[in-house]
Image 1 (tube, rainbow, N blue to C red):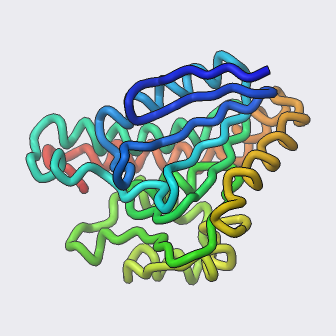
Image 2: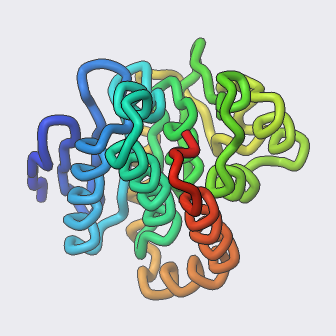
Length: 238
């Protein structure tokens, strides 16, 4: 059975065989805007109501290029709301009560890569794509919450290079570094990610949720503490 539901103008939702496919597509580079955060949260609300495994991905060639720079440059309350909302969305993915499979369809930069690393299983496309936490390269001290998200997935060496050197990783070395679990040809990304998501519907969701809470409890505490630390000042960390 397949059910389609438009979450809004930049996020779509489709339920089929207990897999909720959530697609980000703003027609450009899938910036994380206030609208994108709102629509992603609405899609996750629906997936939770459907007790579905989540399959989350982007448009061809890009998962997400990170936060909406126009909002950040304008500063003020909306900028703070956006950055906080982005990291709270990452925390929600990390603690989602069903498996979350990420289809990394291309570039994942800054908040895009933090969302990627908040999934349980990540399938990426081969090709000339960039995976990077580029904050240091553009003059931003890495937020505490971002550091904790990177720490829990990357190898120690890759973690240090990503956080302090803003190293750009390609899909070819992203698996060894910890950004991705598997890479396939671009034309196969969605099919491969869907196959993984479908296989996970056989799990006992109650056991999955409880085990995720036990395994990731310290991580969530660290990410939430990082969010609190990042927003202890009046300025926006990104």
